[in-house]
Length: 118
Image (cartoon, rainbow, N blue to C red; front, side, top):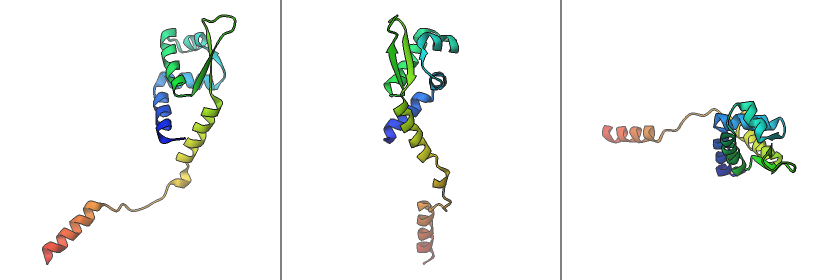
């Protein structure tokens, strides 16, 4: 997953409401009316947040075949799996290494001090 795509997805999930919706959808498919009821938010607000999640590819929606007013939303399993793998690599604690910083300013200051001593 490209860094720009990852940033876009994380930005979408950084909103508390969208994170709550995403978390709810990880439990299974929900109708927009169920999401609205569970979170205590208006349908229009839920629709806005779902469109953001849909635009970044985390969520898919399908109209109810019996009543087109309702849309059934679910997470996109392939996208979530790719996000999980990318975050797993990024946050792998084995990547953490200790090192001493090599400050360029410190190197310049030392060489300036040496030239002043001469």
